[in-house]
Length: 340
Ligand code: CDP
Image 1 (cartoon, rainbow, N blue to C red):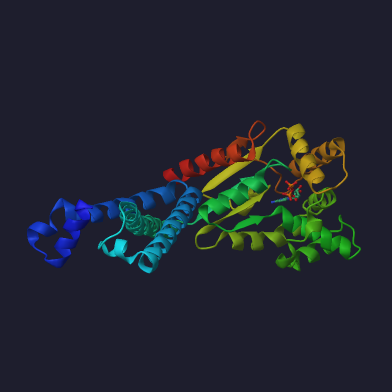
Image 2 (spheres, helix red, strand yellow):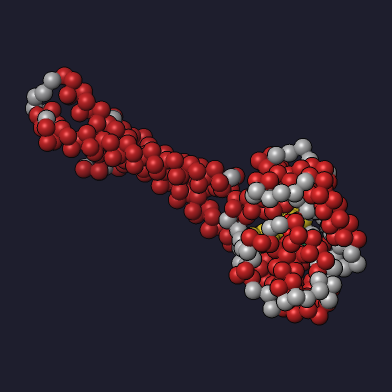
């Protein structure tokens, strides 16, 4: 309160002594510190930064609303307490609490705005940094898809699950009644692929994954899908792409390459849980067999075989849950981007 009086007095009758007094400068220093903390926080963990801004705004508006209600109540039902003319000790105290809460909420709101301003400015500078392309590769059900989405959300980057492209090509070949091994039909399907159909739920099942790994062996199919993937990666701020050959073929210059692995048994356990969660009937053994078959096909093919790029960081998620895998991958991205 003392600071506030000094601040108000300085505003009413400014003098050089008053304008340089700690009481007057204190709110500005606090605001600048919050701007700096916001700028730092967004670089450390964007998700936590957003959560802090959101929680802070809710808290500030909540207290503001409650204090305004209380102040309104006093003006309507107990104006003497509000004007300090009269009123019981209790209503005087409650009035003081209400106006202090109002002042606190306004101060909190200004503080949150300072924090958000720092974050915003920092984000603008971050977006002027070199584009951040993150390549996440790995075998079936290694957790690369979940990881890619979380990393993309964290850095506010677009994300492409490139496996869906191969799954969609296989779907379109089958819809045309074609043979998955027929290079001409598969290549036509790849060239004509409509990227707006990638959210088709039928692409999620094991049959679609198995069919995808058959068309994915055809060089012309891979070539036809390459431009789309590269164009996606070349967005101004960068992008996150997950697949099998992102770090080796699609984006060999990606700033960060992560190769996600886990034992076949653990991957089968996770994928089996996903199927059960969607109400599909499939045994663990069938899922494990599918994963092993696809691993063999994906790493044994002549063109763009699945594998870690020489400069990729390998992340074994066998003993990590989704949260731990995200934390580990985030640390890898921050470590790589700090160097480059
Ligand atoms: O989700 P999951 O890891 O099971 O598979 P996916 O990423 O959707 O990929 C399905 C199939 O597409 C893989 O088994 C690969 O044969 C193929 N694929 C590929 O060859 N290259 C990519 N960049 C992505 C997928």
